[in-house]
Image (cartoon, rainbow, N blue to C red):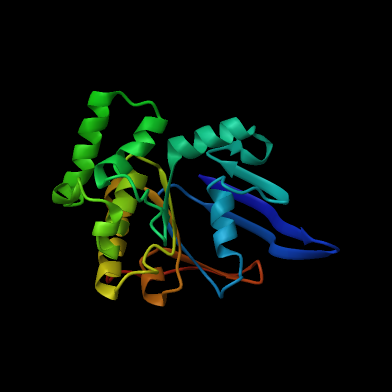
Length: 230
């Protein structure tokens, strides 16, 4: 599904250069659940943003479903992103002045989905995540865990083949975090959705079937996990 080869990300600051990613090469297959770990400043979020086509590498090649992303127009990258990729953020990124229902509907409006179909898909998501009773509330009226559930529901409503999650449990209490991780695991196992998450938590990293350790912008380790307990 994903193949990146010799990816570098460098920022110029006056006469100095900051190397955020250095010579990163990875292969991620459809249906994998990959956890990316590493200290602050290791390049984890930058890598996730490049995989999500929100950012571009300074050098290197990126193939997504055999398409050479590094050669594509911005328009085509946006199409791929909207068609295949759902993003889940640590800070939820819900729109404050829209209700839960309207937040869920937003990605479907971007995709120009018909009104009747939008209603049906939003209803399905509200039901699936047990948030029907919250549909007319605004994000500020929800707990952190509820906001993150809405964030995941919004990422899923476009039926993505890939979910990119940046510290999805970072702002949550541990019980809420476990609920979010169980939801992601279920999506991966039951629906075959590929998941790549950035996490500081050793425990939540183990939900994946593979852990990639980044340090100073390089892949330090790439190992399979034994996650039979989840």
